[in-house]
Length: 287
Image 1 (cartoon, rainbow, N blue to C red):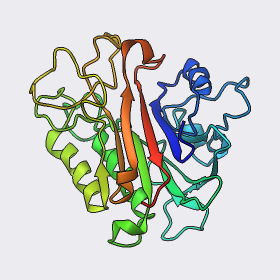
Image 2: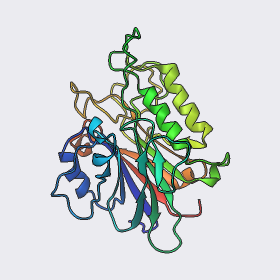
Image 3: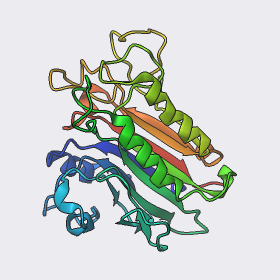
Image 4: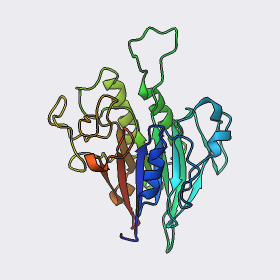
């Protein structure tokens, strides 16, 4: 492994225990951006440092599938931001959060030399139902509600129009289908596109993953020209029959040139969640 490369994995763990053990067994991975976590097992090896502060946060009792940023090696130093209510201003070690269970952020500093830190963001655009008095045919709710809250909270870490002023890596489960009009009924195409538009407005480049950096569905649903790769299977599917991509990666423009992404979505490497893992490599170079 190149010692100048930081390796990050993004994974929706589906609120299951077994993915924790598989995560701990991954070699040469430094940081994990996790979604839909359950309480970590007590028997994890010491190099895995999960977050537990959320359990006692004011809203901890209201939700049990929290996103986390987890340190996995001594090759990095990590400073988590404490979740607080969305006040007009927050302290240097706090982050204002407007959506329960949607975002976790930590500052990652590679060890040795003159490392350049970056912000690691775990995103989970959980389904949110319309207000009960509203007529709706969205049986699972709308993911863009949570996604826009994530973007608004992330915006507090961007204080200038020049994307070169920030180094942000954001990854996770957006529960959306990118770049095709042939999507499940629960997807709101026009509203979903506004999420990518807002990310771009913040100077965050979309990094996929897209084919060939992962396996495509076979057969490909809808438009055959899509470059989407499979990252999720429903309860009626298996990793082999998966045909949906809902997990994505973004990075600050400029910084994104140091970032490469691929999916670990082969049938034999999928893992015990209904989502596969995304492997992200960051070159600690001049970007």
